[in-house]
Length: 229
Image 1 (cartoon, rainbow, N blue to C red):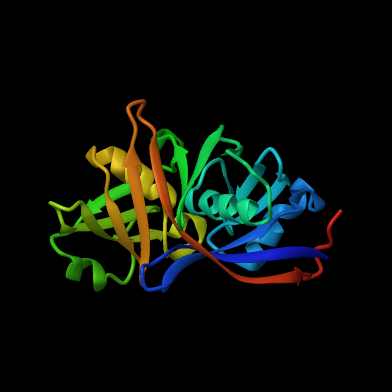
Image 2: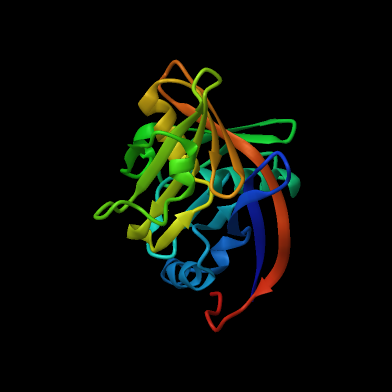
């Protein structure tokens, strides 16, 4: 049995939205070969196993595969570690060192666009065109569908579909926001899914920060026959 923390990451201004995330702060209770089955069973878009809360070492799994870098798991885990008294200034997923900062209710992580999964940026004419989508265009495994809400203010409407990772629709995609901001060359505020809000910042070295609000939904014992080590 292990303790599972369930968060909502990139919560909207009205408290809605947010992408569910599972985090095991004692992730080393599960050896490598058991982590993918746990993530598949939980079926969140990502589940995090923290190997060392003090250094921020961790690994990230979708229902189908491990990821070297992902935005909403890192933002959520940074927030949770800080809440639990671990004063981390960086996280260490397989991709590399990811600096962490806190600004009021916003938790920021700083990543490299090249760490993000390969995705297709598909532009639509209006937010209404995004709202009526029922899935990704045929043959695309990671579809970042977007339109301007307010180009002058840098606000975009986004929906993301990731069938290649068994994710019908991702509610809030931090790695996508990192890659998208780099792609268009400006900081943007992303209104994604049913009500999630992601903020971005560009840096002179080519890195991009993504940040947002996080809430804790529940903490519970997890057991489903996949026993820890």
